[in-house]
Length: 268
Length: 268
Image 1: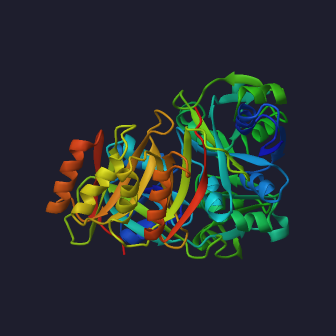
Image 2: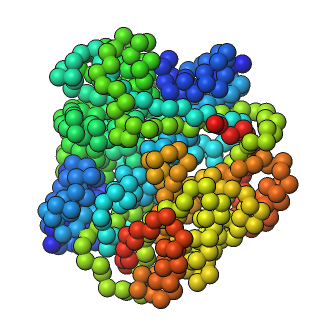
Image 3: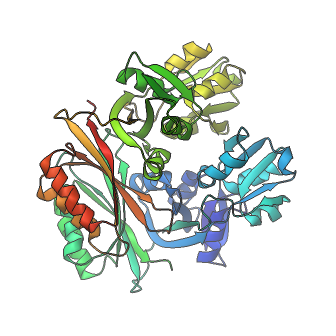
């Protein structure tokens, strides 16, 4: 089994992939778009990409790709994130701090309090930043402790995000719908006709009526006009459950668009 | 009147401030946090900061600041965004492209299609990137046409975001609630007790029952646990309207937390 992830070696995506399937062969890609595209081009059997972080919220590119392409969510993985400050040099040598935009945001206050005036540069991934940091004592990276080992860096500071408890949820995108497990989640995207008051309320009512539990609702712009949104909704249960099947078929009749992203085992 | 905005000279925030009040004195700050903090420290009478873009969605830092600090929204401004590629050099000289993360995301496909392999660097603001680009022919900035004039750059390409129609909504934060105009919006933040199925549905029902129109609902992590959210809700009308006052007082009884951000004239 081949899994596509954001690379290079040492990313939190790698952790997620190993947590999901220890034995799979990993294939590294430069960015989230390429990672998902690898699956569409049949280069890999699955792609695993981050979708939300407990401090910084959604990875909006992942949400947008789920809307734009024919992708099926077949699993999810939750990974604990412990950001470290890594460098070949000492704290006083640092002139540039690099990382993926998400960890940079997770460490916003830390950076402001400790490195005011230092150049902060966002990069394609945490481990790519670590790789670059291995080339100069003046560069530090915010990345995992594993990246320190891989790229020969010292850990100058540990668990530096603004709030210690920090988790990222990753989704597995694949081709074959997994069998129902009794502890599943279902993800859908719904577009409601604009300017119809109470439309979202009606949609949520279909779930509430059947005691279906909403675990997430998130809006994203349609990119057509300001104030025009699609809704990403996660519910507990499998699309094969009668209650969910019924609710979704009723919503289909009311929504401007409904896309089923898939049912998959809920992560612990 | 003094307005604090993201600087330096030439940002879209400057456009927003001028659209809102042509005569005010503008005070420039390095980032969104400092801009809002200037108001809290009484350095300015108002701060104007971006809150959402029609292509890229919410400016999450602004949302988080509204939750964390005692801020009152007193107005909104919508600005059309036309991103340009600016440099002192020619297209073939460019080695680094810099901008604020939002325009970089708005131009994601453009950059991927035209500048694959070129270093993309995010910066504190579009005009700060333009200022840096004025120092080297190898740097290009994505910024407004005005920034080209201010920093002596050539416009190499115009309106380069992936979708031509591109608008950003800014909020005005201030101290004095504006008088009702008959065409107002009200913004609130609601926290619902976790794991209570149908809780969001009930809250929205309070608005639907009174035919109050929802213009936006957005979730943000509470930063306490993955899957735990607060909801940012914008509705049509003023907090002084009886229907809205009633709905909000009923929601207060059901929600774990309700914060009123303010009522203000809706932008055209």
